[in-house]
Length: 288
Length: 127
Image 1 (tube, each protein chain N blue to C red):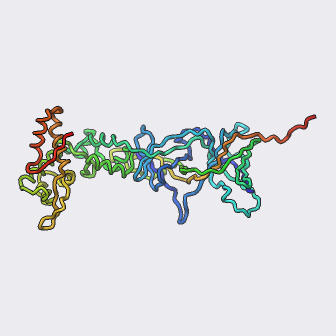
Image 2: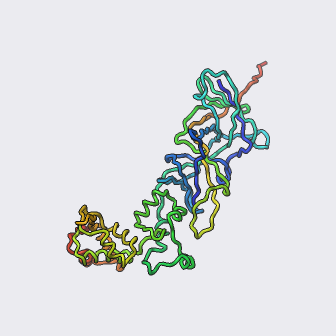
Image 3: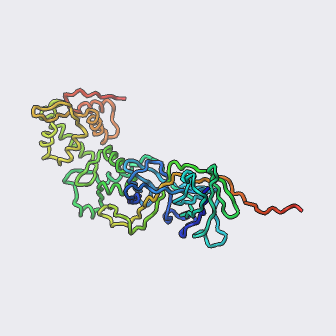
């Protein structure tokens, strides 16, 4: 039978102190224990712990019991059967009365939308230099700037940026101003009509090449990817051909009609909508 | 801001240290007003049935070995000045944030659920 004498360590704190001051604290790991963990947020936010792909909210749980935290404690299964009775001294590092629980949660992405909507991209003419921006108190956010402010994992932040259709311009993440996005889409649609391209025969590179004079290439690439998809066909020169994403194009054009007025007579709306979508294509307009 | 919770540096073949907890109902108090630091707490025994028994002062407690699932991470706070750099927006001044290091994982504990019973060693004889 093994006996242990327990002693307490010299820098023992008797618990109940502010968690900021404790040398040791304990965190319950419900999420998978991963190599990289980061606490993210602004100073006044509640505590959120992120791994590479997931997010947990952290809550302090007051325990009704006292917990003696120690290294080197020997449990019955660690003691060999043949061992003679012995006495050893083990040190208790800390007395704890609360632990922190980390519960997986969905990150709140509202702040991302708010930050990016501060300065939507309106085109090169409207862009300010860094100095001008600073004088005006405008902020632009790189991926790291966003991680400094948004309480989410990197993986979830990437997903959210994709979902809200953000673009990276000059190293900063931006959303496109609605009217500007309409201009770019119109340029693409007008080009398709002007060149009489077939519905599933739109050449990616050639189209971008022609429109580069009107709009920045990186913006064109993004908008092209949102509203067109590979058609599975190839040109004579082996270039991949694209077709319009019907649903996305129609939904956007519907928004274009509805935004200025807010209220629209249904019949007038439907006929305007039908006229605004590219002609010569069979678009299925489903009204619920 | 971002505050990093890092793993401690481990050598080849080393795994994360195992820490333990002894959980007691109630509070530990020192006899005098000095506080608990550096003081002897008590004796821990295991019976042949592997039941842990804790003797603290004139109290005896019986407990059992329990798994801690999910495991608890023991995390230590490092002072701000020694934390590795965080990337801040170039518009802000560099702030010193604390960093945390995981010191170990607790997967087992000794849980003493019952109330401590006083040990009475001297029962006077009835006259």
